[in-house]
Length: 606
Image 1 (cartoon, helix red, strand yellow):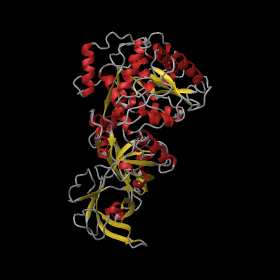
Image 2 (tube, rainbow, N blue to C red):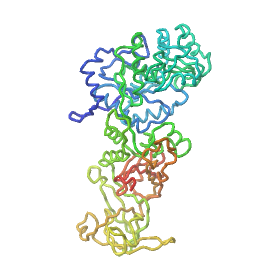
Image 3 (spheres, rainbow, N blue to C red):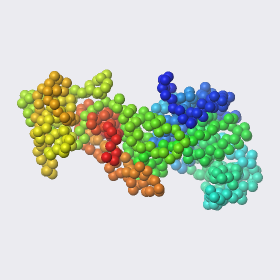
Image 4 (tube, rainbow, N blue to C red):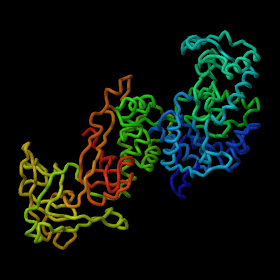
């Protein structure tokens, strides 16, 4: 997988404890003697690690059992940006060792999301790898043959055995933090007996769960992860990549170090929950290097604090529950913390990369980042480039009573113009018509105004943005007793951009859309999905704190230029915030659907 070009000279480069490790390794020549042609005697590894001048190799290794979420954005950014910073290579690798939960849909969504975030795949077919469209994309299942051969070697070397205890017996005999483990009664089998049993497992001669392959390390170890961890289990399940070829599958903790080594990863970067697994990672690779199956020096694992964001959950199990029980409309619902959901909501790749970078790379695992920081990154990256537009989200009609007196005809339409962006004249202008009838925001009129209200009330003057000054005459009543139609007079010779525009001073300016050329649009106002910062803290039922106001849909009116907006076009609706044309349901020239990404400022909880 390719990576964005290196930043221009002079740009600040991230510096953290991981870059210190890489700098040290490069200075010491730790990997200078590495032959980038793959592991000895293994065709798959040779293919995976084609010779190249990369100085370091990192990897992003998602399991395709769900959609990527906001926490993955940091891991993606870290691994790919390190490769870019050091002129190296980053692999996209699917850790597909659990066929019961993995689907092609998830593989496809991960590919699309990583590419969308800016780490472009190039999608160039490699004749040596038909069907694989990325130069640095791999699957754990590519290495199943090697993993099995390594398992047989571990048995032959006395480092592994087949255990026929029940799952409950193994759990009890493993002990806990205060109790040492107890050796399995099958631990003393000879290598020949264990090898025969493993081959029976491979050949489907035993039932699911009847036995497992375990490493022989130390049942007395204070690190429970070293108390003879499981390497293989029997699972009769169809795999999305290998079909029904295998009925035994490697455990993730066994497969992951091997994948790193075969792909010649130099720095295996993961989150802190894998810190306790690092001794086994090192033990396994050391044994396979001793046996000549892998190259030296092997990869090293480094852990950083994961990204914890307030008002979201990142458990794939819980996200799947939200989808399957209909609390949201799907994995890409704009309220979901999945990257597909954030994309549909309107967050930009630039904002997510900036958010990840600002969250920092440390060994602290309990820090929480306020969701408002993501919105701040969005505003910072989107405000300089988002075209402006006017939209009325809660429309009430305003009629200008003296329109014919000023312009000679009730049917006259006055052209108005506004910059596409106030700071970028090169982006051009947008045009719309002001007529006798327009739509304004219902909240812009008050019959009895509160203190500090400078918009429309009887006798007050305001400016229609990019248009004329008007004087409010009051409003008719609707059946509920509220304002039905607002009425006003227009002040001649006060049009914006003309010499008389400043002849009348006003304190209020309101946005509007013409009734003649305004377009109906469905606007979805999204907010946080949960009302609590840590929805599942302390074992709380996270469904109990779902935000009932996380979605409000309004029938709005938007200026005519938005009729040709394409899906995923982003805009700043003046006064309201940043919006995106929905990538699924918006139809240019037809049904217009816009999602609010965020407001112009943080207003959560106010």
